[in-house]
Each structure stands twice: as C-alpha cells, then as structure tokens.
Length: 397
Ligand SMILES: Cc1ncc(COP(=O)(O)O)c(C=O)c1O
Image 1 (cartoon, rainbow, N blue to C red):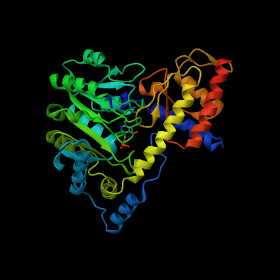
Image 2: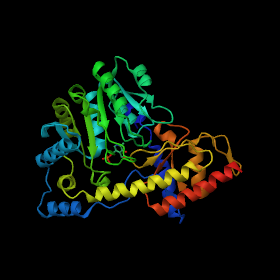
Image 3: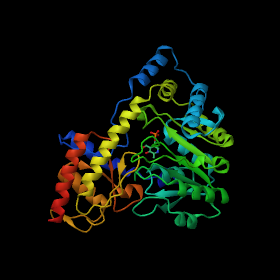
Image 4: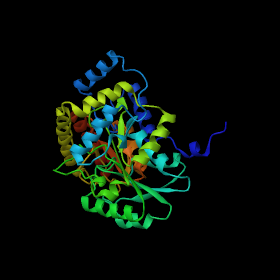
C-alpha cells in the first residue's frame, strides 16, 4: 500500500497508547484512576444545551457560512473587545471545528514546504505534527528548565531566514506555566523585527491561579497584532470539548486564506454547535466561575501532595489544569526489581502496580517529566496521590 511521506512521518499519538492500556485494564475490572484527560470533568451548562435544542427544533441544520455564522463571529469579536481590548472586525474571525482545526489550518495557510516553525517544548502534542502535515519543519526550542518560561536566548538562536512562524501557548498545556508580560514583549519585538508570524493558542486563558493575569501577545501593540493569530475555543472554558467549536482572530488576508482551506476540508463547523456557542459566549458565565474555583482547590491540593513526595520536583502550575513534575531523581532506580529508566517506564510501572495513569513527558518533548491532569474529581486526586506516594516510597526503600 502506498502511503504518502507526510502521512508516514506522523507517529501515532503516544498518549493514545496509555489510554488504550487504561481502557483494557478497566474492561478487565481494574479500578484505574486516570490523570491523562485533557478535558474538564464537568457537564456542559444547561443554558448552552438548551440553545442547541432550540437550534435543532428550529431546523437550523443546514450548511452555514464556512467561517461561521455572522452573529457568532460578531459575538466572538465582542468577547475579544471586552476581555482583551482587542478590536477585530467580524470578518477577521474564523470559526472552526475546535481550536485544533483552527491551529492546523493556520499553519497550512502560513507555511511553504521549506519553512520552519518554532515550537516550544514541552509542547502540546499536536503542534509539531501540524507543522509536518503542512510540509514544513518544526524547530523545537526548549522553555526555561524549571520555570517553563520563554527562553528568549534559545528562541533568538533558533531564528533563521526560514523561520515563518512561532506557536506559543499560554497558559500552557502541558506545563501549567503562564508567560510573563516582559517575556512576551521581548518575543513580540523579535517577531516584528524578523517578520515571524505568531500563532497564540490561548484556550486556557480563563483558568489562572494566584492572581495571575492572562496577557495576549496581540495586545502588545499594533505591529504585533498584525502578525498574530489569537486562537481560542469554547471547549475547555464551557466544558464543550465534544461540540468542536474553536476560533481564531487575526489579519484579514490570513483569515480569508484559512477560510478557503477550511471550505475544501470540512466546510462550516457544526451549525447547532455554533448556535450553542453564541449562548456560551453571551449568556450566564457563572458556570465558568464555579469551574475555576473547583480547579483552584484541586491545584492547591495536588501541588501540596506532589511537593511532599520523594524524588519529585515541581513547578507550581499558574494556569490550565495540568502539573508537570520532574521525576529525574527517580530515574535509574527500581520498583520491585524493575528498572525505571525513563518517564515511559515510570508511567508503565505506576499503571501496572497501582492502577494510576499519567502521561509520560516524552509525549510532549520533555523526557524526565510526567504530566498530571487535574481535570478529575477531588476524591480521585486524593486516592491517586495516595497510590503514587506508596509507589514512590517503595522505590526509595
Ligand atoms: C493547548 C491546547 N490547544 C488546543 C487544544 C484543542 O482544543 P479543541 O478541543 O478546541 O480543538 C487543546 C486540547 O487539549 C489544548 O490543550
């Protein structure tokens, strides 16, 4: 069977391997606690569901404008204005099937096969693959060790005449870090000076801790705004991951190009979900506050527990719902005679021995780390941390 070079270069998702093993164990009756999920464990709020039912009842079930229905693009433009003081014409907004499609389409619209795109590691798993799917090359640049902040020296060294774009994500999946305004200003200057386009993934902008403030790079002046696509979604903020609605705001020419690509790939995003999204963005926001409060409690508890475990060092997450502790001090030791050589071994043994599923940092370009999602109940977090502590205690006996 002939398979294209691009398709062959895309590996299966490493996180999927763990998920498959979890499902297999669960089907055998095991009480597996999974901390791998990248989605809120809350249900979509009632007012949003009702808006979808209304759309169905009214027969809003046909193709729509490719880049989204005008009232939705207007509502999104108003949200950008209200939350970030960013002024976009509705024509500068594209609605896609989740932030994921918007990001992939942006990369495809921006890159030629010879181009490079800077991706910061630890990265969200799909960024390097999106770049490869566009035929371009991901240039992986590490974030600062420990703090996971932008490492401007490393980024400057990576810039070449082939650098077309950089993808940033703040607050970050998988690290939980939030980039400082100062570092974003430095990055903005570098991007403007070197004609590098910024794709800014801000899907966790609502989920911040310890009084941290979200800064969108697009707010740091007109020149950088003209070189930035801000990407967001209702997926995480309104517990709507399955509805598949994300959006991007940026220069008109880019949005038009993305619309042409999307028109041939998928046409419009789901008509009913678009109507529901108008309600999500313009309706009652109290569910978001409740979710943020729950995540804050979980983050505090998880951080406390992990900080007390032997061999673990941890950056305190400032946003999103992930913690990414280093397990480097554990590597090279053994659990019941089995060597823990890397983060994959750690996750495999933890799953087999204690039925706790984490994602190995290697999946995010961060060997020696593990990612723990706290988008799961407090009870599960408590039980999961007890089991993980037992596991680590046995490693250190
Ligand atoms: C950083 C980041 N960007 C984008 C996405 C994708 O969002 P959506 O479900 O809207 O496609 C995710 C989902 O896990 C994410 O963590």
